[in-house]
Image (cartoon, rainbow, N blue to C red; front, side, top):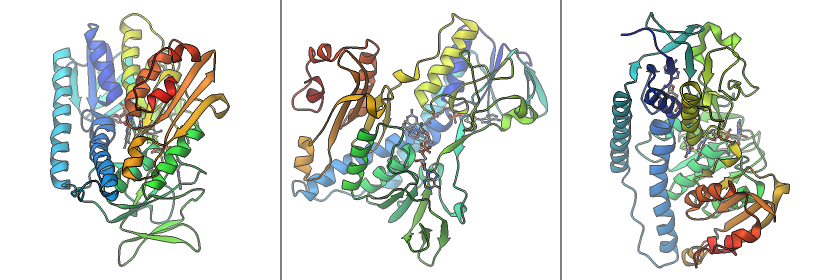
Length: 434
Ligand SMILES: Cc1cc2nc3c(=O)[nH]c(=O)nc-3n(C[C@H](O)[C@H](O)[C@H](O)COP(=O)(O)OP(=O)(O)OC[C@H]3O[C@@H](n4cnc5c(N)ncnc54)[C@H](O)[C@@H]3O)c2cc1C
Ligand SMILES: NC(=O)c1ccc[n+]([C@@H]2O[C@H](COP(=O)([O-])OP(=O)(O)OC[C@H]3O[C@@H](n4cnc5c(N)ncnc54)[C@H](O)[C@@H]3O)[C@@H](O)[C@H]2O)c1
């Protein structure tokens, strides 16, 4: 194996793969080191397995609503065994396609644990590799709360490996992961309680959109407890007990901690002290993704950006171009569309503050009337009549529509210009175009 490269990237997730392929495509000699499975979090224990489970949950959610309204016969149960097998096949195929693409691009793939042992020097199993540029793309992992019995709680990695569904579960944390797990599992027939320490769920989204999302979760039958930090998880004869306070506890089969994630920084070894981090523990970077240690760059979830796959892969490509092609600035995070895959999805672009939303509407979609449920749609526009700068959507298909909204916002349209294109009838989009 060669020991000298133009760049060495540690981590074969969304960020590392993107950097390696683009840098190699620009004619550079690149080594990528991955200690576990290619594809990292997104492919193996994040977006992809979650979205496959959500697809089934979404179908069941719509179907069971029609069943409750007496329009459809009984909704069939989910065949978890077959679902897991199909999902496993898909993930294996994605991993293989990444392996093939790295090979085609001429990237040297090393499957081992990497450690930065000096600036520009990475050690794997006692062997030293050198490069003027080292890229840390080591991602993150779930963290559990510091409480009695935390080891009894599952994290999202475990949940996405379940081959059978529990009858009941309590989820701690009302962020993306907690809410997605709650909505998905409630639709699959699990009795779900979600407990979070904030006064509402989905605090990364504007309050109005998040509140509609929260009301929709409640309409789905999810019990939501806000402003609560659970004290302990204990084993009982029947399963588990989540202790909320001295007087209240929940008896459930499973407890899931969805209480946040921390960056994987073990690869920094003894050099960790020389690499500055933010209060949240992620690495500080400049416009060239360079850390405080010259020659060491960071992309993806271990860096101070947004922990989303398109940001990780986009930044990986941008860094490759900056180092070996023509300079381009990192994507402005205000143009990143994002979605929480609840039912229906809550989607947003433009990171609106509450004060910035100048037009909004909550409405009852036709589909809810048919399903005889209380779920609601919502849209909100932020900025001003003369320059719309954010869009919030809660609706079926919001995850698809929001990406087009992001494109639209690049042109900073005024509200009247938006009205010159018409939406589809009957749909929630026609209200926005209105
Ligand atoms: C449950 C869940 C659902 C999600 N859903 C979505 C979604 O729907 N949409 C979205 O945009 N984002 C979603 N995300 C976030 C998204 O998965 C991450 O932002 C993205 O995967 C980050 O990519 P990354 O390359 O930075 O890190 P990772 O994908 O975590 O990759 C880092 C890699 O580095 C390797 N590594 C670490 N240390 C070393 C070492 N010392 N030596 C060698 N290798 C090492 C790890 O094994 C890992 O494979 C979700 C996350 C979770 C957990
Ligand atoms: N659809 C998507 O794009 C998607 C899906 C999943 C994850 N992600 C990414 O992963 C990141 C991490 O997601 P996450 O949901 O794990 O973390 P998060 O930080 O977004 O949410 C954690 C939640 O748990 C609460 N919490 C923490 N400790 C608690 C305690 N002891 N008791 C009660 N509540 C507690 C926090 O207040 C917060 O609401 C997200 O920010 C997101 O960028 C994206």
